[in-house]
Image (cartoon, rainbow, N blue to C red; front, side):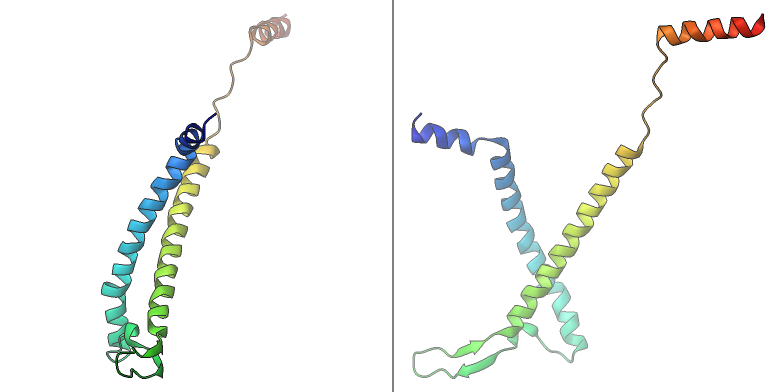
Length: 133
C-alpha cells in the first residue's frame, strides 16, 4: 500500500474529520470568548476597580534603550487569558451538563413492557378456566 493511499485512508476516517471540525470550531469560539472577555467583561471590571485596564498591567524589567524594545512581564495579559480560560471551561461545563441531562432523561424512560408470549397467554387462560371450575 502506498504512503499516499494510507494517508488518505487515515485522513478520511470519520473521527479524524470530526476532530478537525471540532478544532476549527473551537478556535473560532476562542476568538469569540476573547472578544467577550476583552471588550465586554473587562471594561466594567476595570471601571469597578477605578478605571484600571488589566491588559496594561506589566512589570518593566528593562526600559527601552535606543532601538531595543523594553523587557516587561505583562501579567495583565495573563489575567485576561485566565479569565478567557475560565469562561470557556464554564461554557463547556454547562454544555456537557445539558447534554448529559438530556441523555439521562432518554435512558431513564422505561421500555414498554414486553407482550407475553403465546405460551404465557395460553397458560393464563388455562389458569383462569381452572379457577372458575
